[in-house]
Amino acid sequence: MPKPNILFMTSHDIGDWIGCYGHDTVHTPNLDALAAKGCRFDNNFCTSPICAPSRSAMMTSRYPQTNGIMGNIQTPYRWRYNEGERHISHLLGEQDYHTVLFNFQHEAQFDNHLGFHERRAVDTGSKKLLTGEHVSTADETADELIKFFGEYDKDSTPFYAQVGFFETHTPYDFGDAQPDDSLGIGTPPYMANETKEREHIAGLQGSVRSLDAAIGKILQALSETGLEENTIVIFVADHGVEFPHCKCHLYDGGIRTALLMQLPPSLPQGGSVCDWLISNIDVLPTLFDLLNLPCPENVQGRSFAEFFRNEGAVPTRDAVFAMMQADGMFVESRCVRTNQYKLIRNFSPSRLPDAPFRLGRGGLTERPVIELYDLHEDPFELSDIATDARHKDVREDLDKRLLNWLKEVEDPILQGPTPTAYYKMAIADMMTGNT
Image: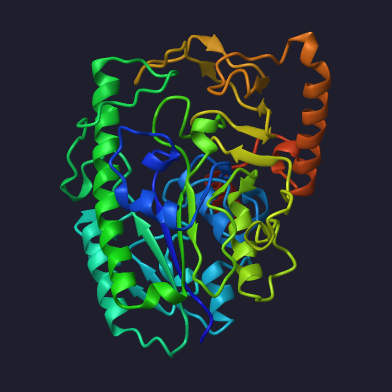
């Protein structure tokens, strides 16, 4: 039997808003079934609460500060991979995988900067983004995948199919998705339970339902063609939902993300739920470990493949790290998170809104330079204990660990406010015209 195929599906801004993660007002029978047949990772965290830095880190297993993409890739932000960085499409292509991109990616400005052999449901979709690219609906993308599965020769080169879905990005109406409150509205404790907020959540729930239906078609086709028997299936979100206190922020609402994996019978199965702390940069080395492929020495993620192999395996990390690059918006910040505590360091002026948070409402109090939360006592991170003397030792320990990480990844924040990609372009242009 050839090496297992890989079906790697990503979705915008969904966080963990899926039924199997406890959000019982969302219709996700197909993603819930995937979790039931495979494994649900309850403590998976992205490296940045915005699209490109999170995805680029996940697909290279290298932190944003290291690979060069610290902010979004579209204009006017223009962040790019550093020279020599290699995406999973390059790495698997070198291992004789046939690599195919379905719909879109947000790891590079142009698809041809990556290593895909083939691109499907790309630049033919019905929605044009601000970047100029066209994206397909989840249904259109599913149809293209079904066609691909039907054409694929199971005895040929294994495939890596990377699929990007747009539905769950605001304004939640792509692909004719309709707001859904049929199971109620899952208003989180940190968010106001008012009309505007409830309508926003209903929009998210409708878009998730639409996405789930398309994923159901894909998984059914994978089963009917027999490809499921030799395919690793992964579903992951890029970052948290677009709510206050979530997307663009380092609170758990912004960095905790769904991760579902189903392995074929030829690979070890492990348990059905994993509570290990996992960073999204750990997914790539885990795949390579499971497939017994050589992993580049410069990856910064840690394989969690032992979870599948060994019932008594211990977690490979006791902390995860994340960053937010302001690019003139929001707050520039870095964080370290353990099982119990979160420490955030802020590096640009910003205000904190009063809770419960309301959409469109500005902040009222100055954001402190350091925040600390006890996640056991305060899972929604509403009570900052950074100045509480009883937690002095915790604060000092986490602060030291965060500083060590910033040094390890050579974070430019240690040298001063991070120059944006636009700033670098502007200076280079000025110098070129005046030398």
